[in-house]
Image (cartoon, rainbow, N blue to C red; front, side, top):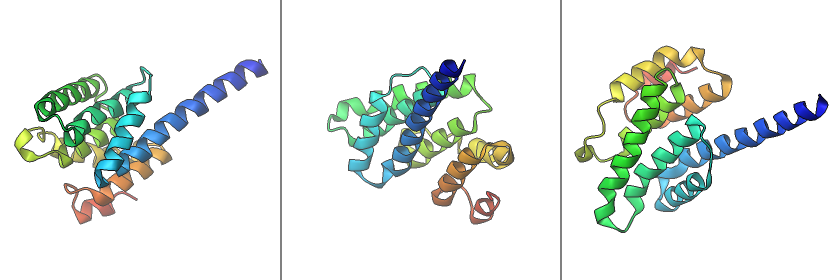
Length: 160
């Protein structure tokens, strides 16, 4: 019994560190092309069917359009990443972290691309569901909100 518990704990701890490393890398990805490339590389190394890992991989695809030197591939990177992210949100509409990821992608992608239709919806969802999240996710949402271009100062104050 102890062995099973230890194995499960080890697996859970390993998974958590994967998700935590993706979160940390993602939060810095838009600061520079180097950070973006590091995040993309980290996301590509993850081989998991977990929805959160998949969501960060989708965000990495969209971000890849920003740093690629192959201009003819930019559109396909955005389309592939956005399609994957939308599919995950459609399957898990009450997942706040998925909404944070989509909102950050939509805030940081050029408006001309046209992938910015869910900003108000996601902002509203995050504000109304913030109190229901665990401490780690609350901290992540608060960190995102602090630098968000869509969330007003008064709304930022509601993330306590």
